[in-house]
Image (cartoon, rainbow, N blue to C red):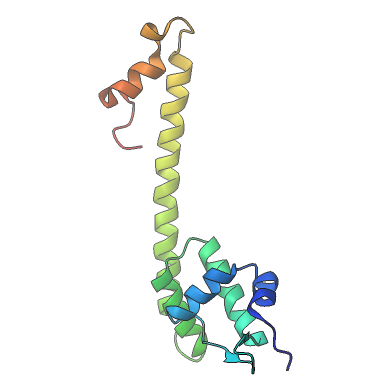
Length: 140
């Protein structure tokens, strides 16, 4: 079994060295064995776990959700209901964010379309930014 340094683990996993140390500190990643020179020595299982964590973070899962998902992964014979619930909750968050971004897009489009390209004292962009009450959507 080939063991690698933290720098090599970072290169192979795409996770920065300080982040790997952080994941160890908070218990998402098991602390690796140490070499005679007291350097961390990572195994393929560490890299696999780092890839899981990195992918979950890219999808926007919070640390505690990832912790739960990792516990589920460590015991594959249990029900996946918890994993489903976590993914569904994240999906709801993403859908809410999409709605918010669409409202923001509409607001910006309206501001730009309403611009008369005259002077600043007649500028719809400046006017709307100065008075949130003139926005199309109260929450964007």
